[in-house]
Image (tube, rainbow, N blue to C red):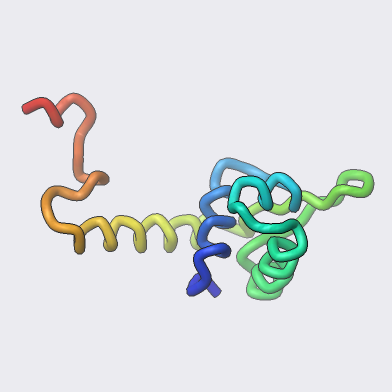
Length: 96
């Protein structure tokens, strides 16, 4: 489900709260139709859930597991770049 970069971007966009398709399309840089197709698959995979408000459908993460999975994958990728990964930097300690 998360092998597609657009779906990963959607998860990252939804980590701070719900959004509707047009908002997500702007954030991930894809057409609303393409985002809708990804969201339909993500909904079937129970990564996202919906809430309807009038004619708008808002999407949010089903639970924190997808967010954590994407975060961990990004952290692992940072390790492969060499040096001290960004997520290991402690605020204020970078100057030392």
